[in-house]
Image: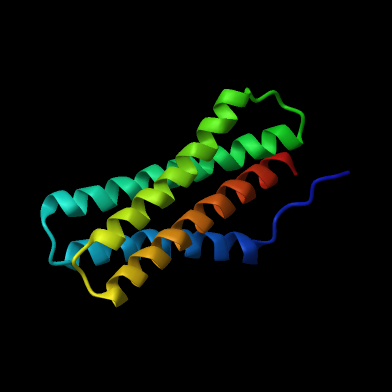
Amino acid sequence: MKNQKTSTAFVAASWIALLAGVIGFIVGLARAEMLLNEKGYYFTILLYGLFAVVSLQKAVRDRQENIPVTDIYYGICWFGTLSSITLLIIGLVNAIILPSEKGFYAFAFLLALFGAISVQKNTRDNLSA
């Protein structure tokens, strides 16, 4: 099976999703009326989540292409992804902010994670095409 190059439209949409999620999340944090340590918590969770999903996407793809990936690394990737989402949920449930703000952070976070996965996939597909 020959790999096809990813369409320019999907590459652009992926980058837009990643940037909209990350920039929206960070702008929301910058404008939020919360303590600096709270902002740091959410920012760290964003970075952790982005790294985790890119690592997971790579590990899943490597396994599909019969590139060796240890079970421990694969498990850590899944743990990192799920724990970042869980930590965001715990933080938002306990945050003293409006429900609309909680929803904004949740959706910006998920959009950023989706964008990161898509950008990683597109980059890998276009390198192998």
